Length: 133
Image 1 (cartoon, rainbow, N blue to C red):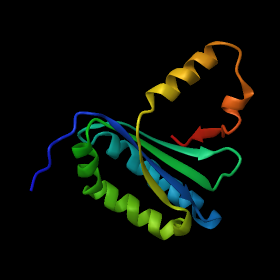
Image 2: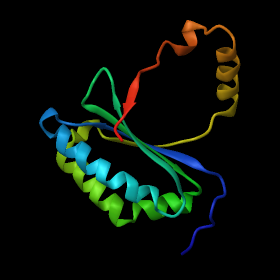
Image 3: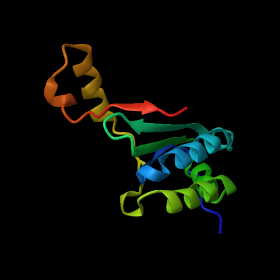
Image 4: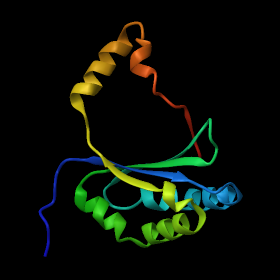
């Protein structure tokens, strides 16, 4: 049964805690997949980051045109390889898949606050990350 395609874009996030001995292998595997995933129909962006303070904490951020595009990705060979690698090489208890929604009001408040002198309370929970591309 075909579902009705949603027109609203959304973002997927995958947080990964990799075992230190598997970090290099997982980073190489993900780096090889990122470009192929970006070419999937409906993928606007797919980016791989690592946390500066903890090199074993990684995140994948995907931007998708529609829910159908994201669901097609979940059924793709690329995702099967990615998920298999994550199961083998990461700490599965610290593997988290999320779909993020756009929070317009919060974004507008943050943008307004950042256009002035920054309020430390707004940015206090910020963590630095670096790209793995």
